[in-house]
Amino acid sequence: MLTSDRPDTARRAMPSPSLSIASAEDLKKRIRDIPDFPKKGIVFKDITPLLADPSALSMAVEFLTQPYRNAGVELVIGAESRGFIFATAVARNLSAGFVPIRKPGKLPSKTHSASYELEYGTDSLEIHLDAIRPGARVLMIDDLLATGGTMAACCDLVESLKGNIVGVAFLIELAFLNGREKLGKYPIHRVIQY
Image 1: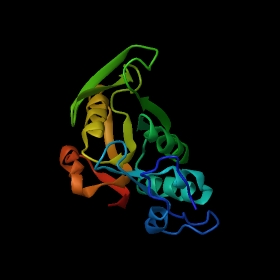
Image 2: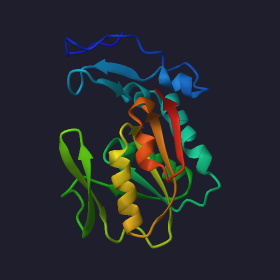
Image 3: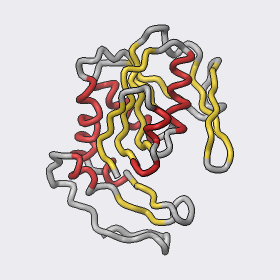
């Protein structure tokens, strides 16, 4: 049984880590809902139990990797911060390099930035100017597709450096938020859908 120091957090038992993982539905059982986080009315999809389960983490990475095994991916791009978790592992599986896209002021060399809309304002992301050689085959990875704003900004950054985006992949898609609409020109893969 999981406990929380947050009084408004629903408690529920997570499946035993020893259970085998054979499908996306098995992975879904290792994601818990946290009501009213980070603000009232939002149900946060907490992937930390999945990450803590070696079998679930391994299969999540494999499910993200499978569609791209023969796609000639040279670089895998991960969006800060949970995208890093999956992008580095997928890059390793594909024998590709990894490039981070970060919040402003986190990268040490010269950067290019893109801004995107949030519910209440804007935010920015940055990539090193020399991170991608023109024409490089790039796979974009993040943990969650919600409204699509973060990934659309990431794709804009990659395209500004003349990278060739071969796919955009997510562990989770919240389909009811219509994030695919902002990413319509890219092939999208998701493992789990709500």
